[in-house]
Image (tube, rainbow, N blue to C red; front, side, top):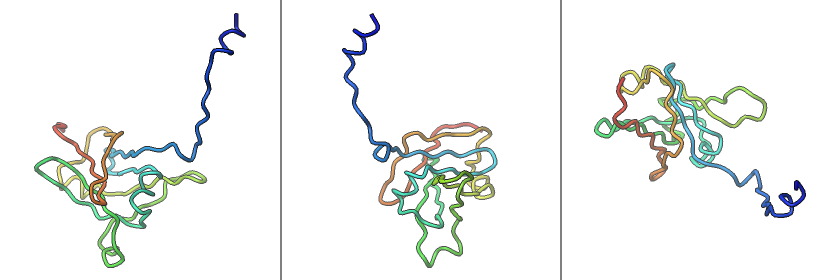
Length: 126
């Protein structure tokens, strides 16, 4: 019985390096976490410029240019050997923008629009 199930399977191998998706989250401490894959798609910057669109309750992250670094947010490496994820500490910015969540908000399918990672909070209530 067991052998017949195995012979009917059609396995397909997936290359780990090609599996990736955009992902980000914002927690109640004001930490914006960006997956390593997402960070690479944005050019792997050392700093991000944060923007808001109050009308749509959206947060935008854009790679800072060399001239903008002094006023931008550091893209700190999260702990863990070989980890490529980034953490941006932006509590005051998020609180002032009215986007600091009470609980972690995950963005499983954010978009990159003209070089800006868009995190849409939508009608989230605080």
